[in-house]
Image (cartoon, rainbow, N blue to C red):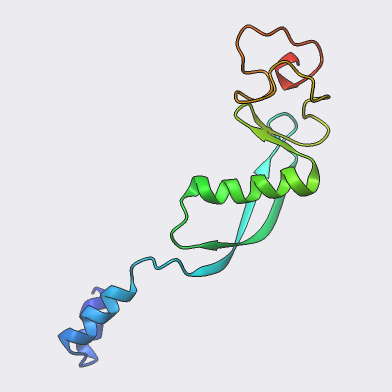
Length: 118
């Protein structure tokens, strides 16, 4: 039996049911959510509770936790992957740094400067 059928048994009117249907759609409500990210090299994991909305996509939620670990814990999270402080690029002079992330330039030679050189 569906929820709608159960509510009909409780003598709710059609207008009541329509109102309930309207309330079932995402409205940007905020709520706490446990999010995590792991290092692509050593599988070190960070998990934390963050405030998200019911309209956020999976990618937007992942961006929330990635922004946090970059700013607060010194992680490298870019198009090349997610790396804990121990495994991120060893210096910002990596020739792959920038739009394509560390190591994704394709023709750049890396010598111990980033995950692409390991």
